Image 1 (cartoon, rainbow, N blue to C red):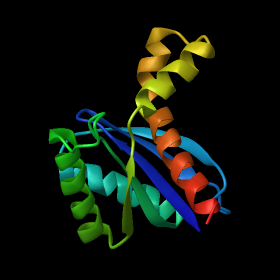
Image 2 (cartoon, helix red, strand yellow):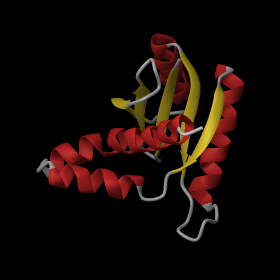
Image 3 (cartoon, rainbow, N blue to C red):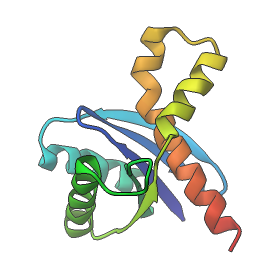
Image 4 (cartoon, rainbow, N blue to C red):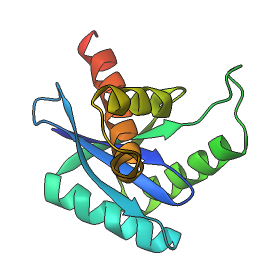
Length: 138
């Protein structure tokens, strides 16, 4: 069973996928956002390719735990995914995942240009790996 991780941004969507055993997350791509229908179609192609059974979508919460405008958009997008793809969608608290992704890339000494291209994909890996770690403890 494969699980897809998504980091939803206003301009891009970072995408990660689990290994078949659900132990590790690997970055797949970054989707440049256009229209919601096109975004969902790109995600559908990836889901079909990897035979995805669950989508984990990052839920951007404020540091105090409340849900702001970005969180509302993520909830709306999750409903569209469920409706159009007929795949279970789980929301995952993504606070600090982008910060962690930037830190990891800085430690890897990647240039600013390279970091900008892959930050969303790396954030998707952090989102998905957090989810995989939680379910492996059950």
